[in-house]
Length: 264
Image: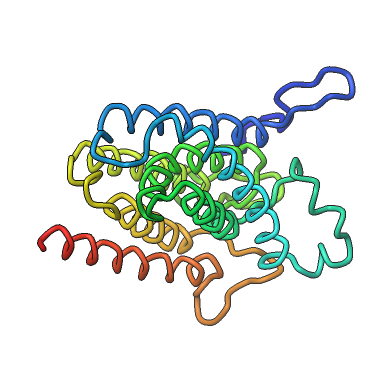
């Protein structure tokens, strides 16, 4: 099927243009803030992290996502382009954000905020992990709207002919990721967040998020077209799979640690 005719500009008032990509991030941040406060009020009574603190943390998270995501994309996925055009790094409306770069930025931001507020690192990341699938869902939908990060050629009946993807149908890998990284991971974390021991002993939500994201990303990368400027690293391994492997290992370690501490 042909790619739906979607204008990447959601709102245009004179010279002012607001892209769906920007609205996706805004919705993700606002939705994450509201949901994080809800979780802490509804289920997080045993956590030392209080609902009124989440609004302050959100500011740090926004900075970590934007700075880390954009710099990560520039340094990992397109260093030559941005080396010659460094001012383009500021053009966020053109797309080009790295989850792994944003993830690193958020880790730094959360570590600094947790230290400032005298909270355990994993206590804070548990809440951040639970709300992150909201942003991932809307971010992947925005990737689809932009017709970017599409999948490899396919004969599946739901294959889509993307404007910049050549004449053959391709996997809508952005939608696969929106479902797995967004909806499925959100549901799994919500089920776990309803457990009291998820808040009395930190690490369950953080570890589960890392494992869930890594497995989702590594799976979808099997049908996602790798970035042309990078291609495959060796064999059929992609950069996304390589960068997700440490997340998987870290998630398993956190869950093992949580299990042992809970049993002690």
